[in-house]
Length: 146
Image (tube, rainbow, N blue to C red; front, side, top):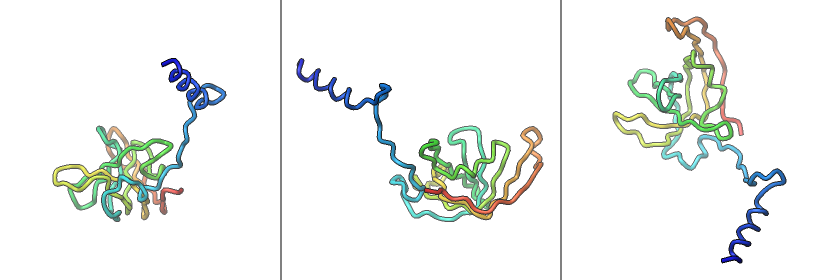
């Protein structure tokens, strides 16, 4: 028992850095379409990206339908969408999105996706009290750049 305790202690000493933090290998973020969680072909859809109350906060309404796609939230180190798509909680982003499904499509359920890119972008900034559009501008294209 004493020998195994010393072995574990030695491994912990080897696994720590000089400041005492446990060393971890950080892998680079993956592009949306390269994620192992993707369950089907990526596809283009015209939609409106916005921030919603609830989970997930980021959603894409597929224009012309009643469908909402939930954009799975990643982390700053491993995002699920190009960070340039977020214009604030007072913005609606209309674009042609290249999305990759992370769950199978089921009637009545929100399908989870990640966003590889967006093009033909039109941003509407609106007043959060009245809901009226205050400013509209057009952007080019954004893509997850790795």
